[in-house]
Image (tube, rainbow, N blue to C red; front, side, top):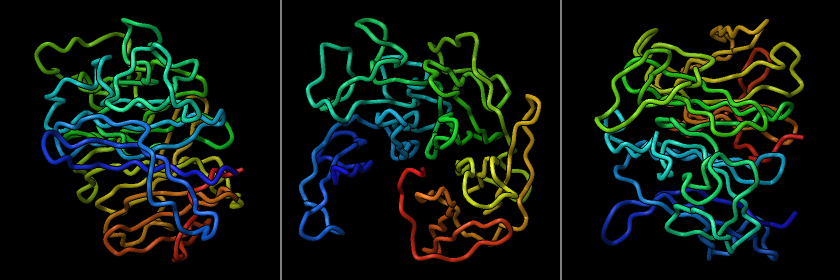
Length: 311
């Protein structure tokens, strides 16, 4: 209703490290499919490497912007970010975009044109970055909210063995998903100087990184809440390299996942899922430059999808 939209991108300054940037743009009133070309940067922070930069963000039901950030790249969280409460990397961040003058909080962004919502994990000076909602993630480049329950589903790309889906109930904060102390359900040795806290939050789903036809990286999806009765309530996710798509659901406290053969196409690079306002689901093939609408038993090629919150 306010004609504002938000973009998450990486910029390369003339010198120094690359930076992750969250910016707000305004729709042009005269030409509604064109933006006013001067954006307003809300949040900016440095990246040590050109991978594990995150890249997904969604508004929650309260109107706060949730942002995924990777651990800064390299191997084994070598920069020691994911468990560091004074780093914005390896986290889910949460900010108030309607406040452009922050209070006297412990903010960690290089640009700080935002406020801090109530309920974040480490409020107050000396506790950690106030922007942090959850921590202990490696490269959560795709996450989503369940449109019905408001729970968060986070697809976190693994290091060498396991891809995983992490889950945060609606209203939760401060969950620690374990990286680099854990990959999937398997404990591992963190970098020197990193302390592994307890307890850690286990993933709800995992699959082998190199099994089943060279899976390589999870592409987190959505809980389907559209018109198709057969898959309603299932979490739909896939693998970037194989194009495989799975359906997962919790039954009596246990999660099970089954490959959805009817919807799996020869996708060269399954790079993203998306939702429209009717909660119908789409999937993008980055290499082929195609977008498909997912139905109960088929995928129909479409020209695009509207990244709007489904009602």
